[in-house]
Image (cartoon, rainbow, N blue to C red; front, side, top):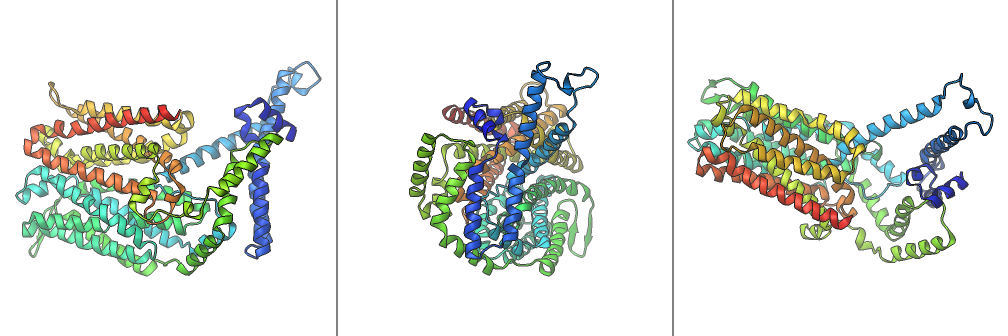
Length: 595
């Protein structure tokens, strides 16, 4: 096997590099285990189990490579020596290898999809945890608390989109223009710009109290939203939406998964976070389409405009009771002990982990000259990795300075796709009413259908397309398709038809979803490890970029309304076109300079 690995290295056969054992990585892990056993922080049974699992992962790829190579040689050398494969009566069959390859393919597709979905949440990992850190995660994990976090995400996304089909009618009933729906929808995003920061900071100390505050704020906000109709005040309506935005606890939901869910199920939990968001986005408009009734109880009106507020207020009250009864606050004493241990071993871990990560990229065998260079490089790495270089960012400014040019371009892409999607969704009711006389139910069905495409699209991209093409190829193609979708959405000389609107909207939305998945997947891999923890983390930066994009998009709709509904579509699509073209140029420039 060693000779085979050396032969592969000498020939530089790239496709076989995954088939030899990484002895350097295993030596590093053995050294870590010995140190942990000496210090009494780990027992031999757990060490044996962990090392066996790692050896098996290394025991499988190497075996497949050896079997495949030997069988390939047998087929190439037919007739040179006697073999059962030379018998014409016996068909060439390799059942064991076929079964192994089929199992590997199934596992790869499943893992790739889960990993692709999980990276949407931008819950990044800094380092591989030690077994003692995994034990801490197990102590802090509570399934019902995780479920409550996912339920919070689901309900919040419903709350965000349940008003979209009726926002223009509600604004008109209060004496405002239909395009004021942009401000009504965007008020929630305005408040979320600020709430994301304080919720992220609050989650450093507690998870239960921020979720309670979130539920109370959303309950109050929905009550205000529902009561605005009877008091006939657009300001009460806006205040209600601001309160809803102040209750945005998505930063807490992300942080709980990152800090309190064991590594072995963290990917599934992150994928669950993304799935809950997607389902909430689809259920919101669908629920609005169902709430088509009109009656009064005392002085309170219940109709298609107010019922979304009343229904969500009840939902948040039920959630608050469930939260109060079932949520278990993780032990922060355990977290403090873990932090103290990490601080005490920071200098040793910096050099160790740097060498370990570098070992993952090295071939199995190296020459003596290579070894000298490698040892020198390891020494340099340890010298250039001060303790401060591994600490989280302390401010938005410091976090921004940690972003590389490629990361900034990807945040620009994220801004662009959120802007384009918000324009499409927020103005859908006004545009379809003006051009096609669609009812609220029809708009709700259209938006729900768009939302239901999220999960199937991510399944296709995560399981198949991402295995066939490079991420940057999918990224650029998706940007171009978004730009084409925007172009097809313009109303020019010919009459604007339902078919044109639906096809262009579907192309734009699906392309943006593909773009978001690939962009966030790439973003989670290239962000600085210092942005994987702390208040000002990568998830917060991406959330702020997307939220600001939504705020600007909703403000654009309201400002364009002053020019009249006949100009609304083209005026709002023009900035979308400019931003999408600019993002394509930035992507081409960045990747041309990198490759």
